[in-house]
Amino acid sequence: MTSSSIRLGKFLGIEVGLNYSLLFIAALVTFQLSSLILPNQAPGYSELVYWLLGMATAVVFFFSILWHEFAHALMAKVFKVRVRRIVLFFMGGVAEIEEDPRTPTAEFWIALVGPLSSLLLGGIFMGLYLPLGRHDIYGEMFFWLGEINIILAAFNMIPAFPLDGGRVFRAIFWFFSKNYLQATRLASYLSQGFAYLAILSGILSLFTGRVLMGSGLWGIFLGWFLLSAAKNHLQTAQVRESLRGIPLGRLVRQGQPLNPDWPLAYAIDRMAIGGTATSSPVIRDGHTIGFLSLDVLRRIPRIGWGGVRVENVMTPISSVRAVDAYQDLYDTLRNEDLQREPYLLVTANQQPIGLLSQRELIAFAEQQARGI
Image 1 (tube, rainbow, N blue to C red):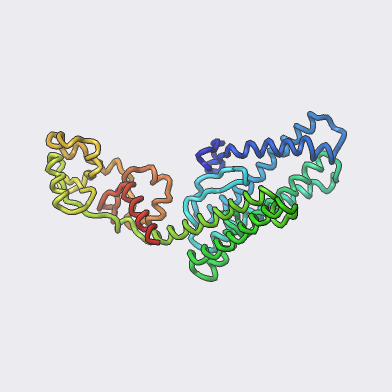
Image 2: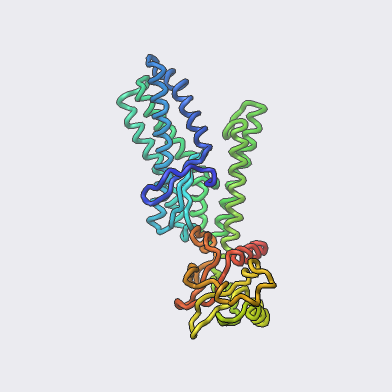
């Protein structure tokens, strides 16, 4: 989703993006307002006025979605949960957080504040509409904006992932069960139930014209979307629980200390004799100045090992991002800043104890996930 987005900049320190799919929705909303809704409900204006006000209403509507997502983001900050970015797309928007909320209370309020903010905004627009009434062109604009925000609030409270209602219900289950994975499983099953209902409704409406939840292809698409999201949320929760509580220090395998002046061939032999560690500390005068990783073998032909010193090919510790040995593996893999680092220097009491590559982290995570 984010890979096909237009970056709009930052607001309150949060990056905002717009998915290309939203451009189609913007054009569709503008067309409906300008050609159908406003001319039928408030006749007597020129075509140019209808189109200008239609476009203005569409812009305000998408700012309403942004308002909804920023409500999530700001509440996340209250609970000290880092927000990666906000992306607007055809289903509305999403506030991507750096890590999952650690308590059911945090998840409950972060999820619920979005629909509440849309409901509040809908009430404000309805308040602006009331003194103008129907058949006034500005009144119609405010009525449409009020109605759509109230619908947005109600739609998001459907208890199905990835909608806010799904997260609210998971938070409630989590609060009473004290078990995140069990709560996610229950919320996922509830989400899948709604998804199958939407699909069934869509199929029935195609053949009978009766509408239960959505209509036709839209109901089928919505159901498929909710079903996929529910299963993905459950799978993510299972991975989270399998990796949660594993400190990075547990993954570090101590290698043989190396001298920076040794030839690479000799250093590799010492590493092979010392065990299965994929990196070894390079020590000078009792201080670790870097690490030699076996990844270097991919870059230097075997014939050249004798003429290269360890110091020439080691990874200096000054060039590697340091992380604490007690840092959680799951949080590390979720951190976008750390994902960009090819190596992480693991430290204990601010002293380096080992080097971990992204390849090692991912391989271990995949091995754990296979054991779920």
